Length: 151
Image (cartoon, rainbow, N blue to C red; front, side):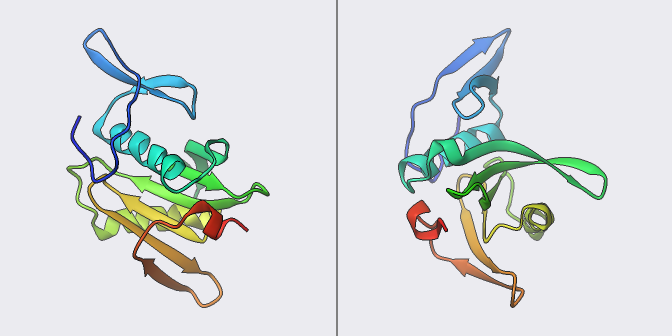
């Protein structure tokens, strides 16, 4: 898989019938290794190892329902009281982070109402803080540490 703009992590990868699979410690199973999954696994490891997000408070591919459609967000983290805290939308490294990607995570956030949103393709990462009272979005220069945003 392609190098990303993230620290290097080691993963359990296996091949079956010509298809590669990566072990997802959050879902506790092997999942098909696609370019997007590579970004998802690396970014989740980054949150745990570099930003001190407890792995027990991270959910991968959380289902949500919006306008009678079932969707799945890539990574959702929770605070110590169980409220959604940070939402991450992952794209494959070859996917440009266009406004449509930000629209997608904004729709997901209508359901979860988190204060922090991240969009990444593994090469570029954008993080913003949502102020629901003023309806403003403030782009941040870095992904926040868990201890800085946990309620």
